[in-house]
Image (cartoon, rainbow, N blue to C red):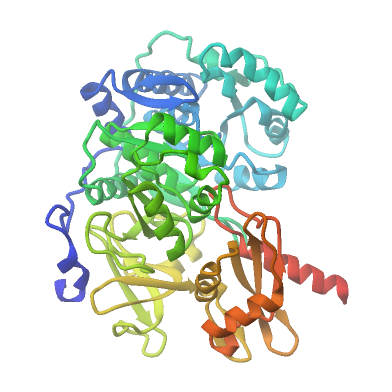
Length: 562
């Protein structure tokens, strides 16, 4: 019912309320873009460029090779790579031959890798030469049959490709030599094969899984989110509709968010391929390299995470770089502090807005309008063809405006379910609605706000306390670079509020100073009882601060003290 979707009245005329989702497999867009924009640059990587024709041909070569070594439709292929041309080729090569991509973080240690390979049943993995010693151990522990190995140097221009191994040897103190034999295959050799005639299997976009996206596993073991071709096509089409001012074939996107993170996969890789944008890829986030890249290559779009923007804003030489090419940024993965939004817009002259999503929704469900009404502090409104509501904790029904409850979402981007986990799927998906586990509310205009994760809420002396609210206040302090607030065990209050703070370079501060500041802006029960100053905070590869890691650390300290 449109009456229950007050957000639609705020949609600009250029954004449709509903989108007719293409009944196509995801790889269709690479085929189309290669036809329509054959010579257009698809990827710029540290000076090396690949056209859309080259990207498609190399994806076909990999697809053909995978089939030649036994891959059948539905087999799982782990991709354990940073952002580089091989990551895109591996992804599209896998789905072109009917395989299922298993997104695998290159930072995984042996225990994490073993768990994911076993859980997904992956029989193939595509990885870096540097990671080969770690990956090869998995052959004896899992169902892994084939390892395809590449190196960053494989896609570097001359003379960088010659110099890189020397730099790697100096920095990493390791040289890995891998031979193309038996069940170990070199990516570079595969790319030297003749243009194949690949047998592309029939794909049912609604039913066939394109990727398994493992959730962070902050509570219990990570679960494989089954995202179909339709899920990913839908979310990418929504993204294109939302960014209606972006011209097909003309934009360039800075790809820092890792593609093994669902947000980078959709908002950088799949969107670029659907819209024939140029992807400017960096294999890891380094603030200085990022600033140099923006100044030199002038990307127009910069999907990111709050910690990335914070890091750039606090760079000591920020003012020496020209960032004015940036027109639009949607921030995801964590709450965007208002101060950061305002400062970044001032520096770039572009628009930075907050969005919201989760792996189970491919991932985006909400965002603020880039070029229309937005509400600061809000995650914005649902995307086209997406429904959302808040379920009241009091009544169990649809909440009133501004009433707190759990956020539910529904749409064609919502997952098929969790891999081999029927009970968890049934708990998360009910009557077509995805129960997100996030606490929030919707205002009278239909804009949504996330107060916190259900599992991050602090209960101290019976009070419900939301860390995000305290973090927003502390971010406004002029000495704070980064902050995270967590509830730690307390024998008297149940939990107590602790703030972990990274100060800006060259400044000093005391707990008393912050305590005094917090008391001016927060109710007494919300004021942190403990302040800890750190040089850095634990983060995921995408820059999301790991609140749970800090809580586990505190629990361990308590256990050892007893």
